[in-house]
Length: 145
Image (cartoon, rainbow, N blue to C red; front, side, top):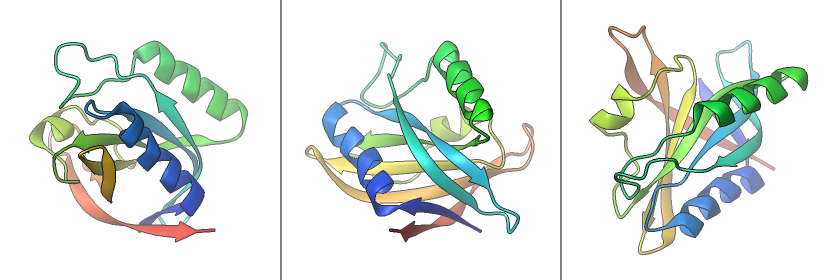
């Protein structure tokens, strides 16, 4: 299983992390669930980070914005296939908070490490299990044209 994303879209979400540095960026990955268990990203939607208490190491997408994105995606024949956010001056790996606040099983969670304002590494993790025993699994990112 893998997350398939074009180089252009991958660079867009990485650039979003650079633009919001030293705060976390966040956004939604919209596309298709593929029969082989992978996800194909057809667009990235940058969202506002509504966390005011600790935006340098936490993020939140407002429920209203998320519902709008889900509605528009469904109308376009697409699905929310994942989410992305940045880790300013922190590794591109999930934290216990990331896991606690992740609820979309079967979706990809993409994290970009942004060091001193520059995106350096991007990793993806698939959320599996149910709410009581959810966990992240490492996931390959397959870049297309």
